[in-house]
Image 1 (cartoon, one colour):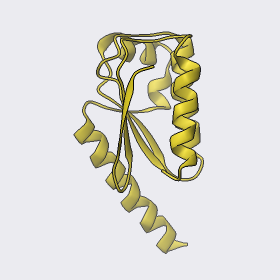
Image 2 (cartoon, helix red, strand yellow; image 1 turned 135 degrees about the vertical axis):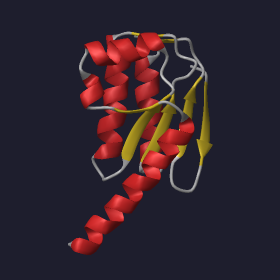
Image 3 (cartoon, helix red, strand yellow; image 1 turned 90 degrees about the horizontal axis):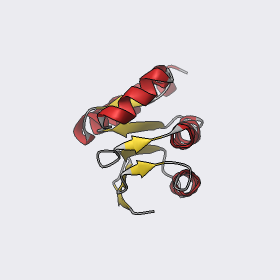
Image 4 (spheres, helix red, strand yellow; image 1 turned 30 degrees about the vertical axis):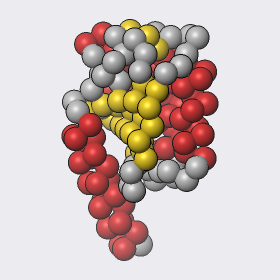
Length: 125
């Protein structure tokens, strides 16, 4: 599986450099996402701008990423999904569960807002 990882201070940008996210790649993506999470990162942007096709196993990988990063108060954002991937997410009604952004910039803004909201909640408790 081809991908690039760009580690920032507050988040990681994981760019999938494949045209298909299907059953041969999904287990590898799950493993890589869990590895990034285990390294101590709480927020991840999954750039899917190059992915033209995904299937149910690909959606499963996205859900694993979402669950891993959300369980400790972080956020998992899918950025720049292409039309087919967006349709699959909507048909599966996962657009109600997954965080989706039109661009990496929009995703980064959402992470900063999430971090600020999380800080406010901690202060209130």
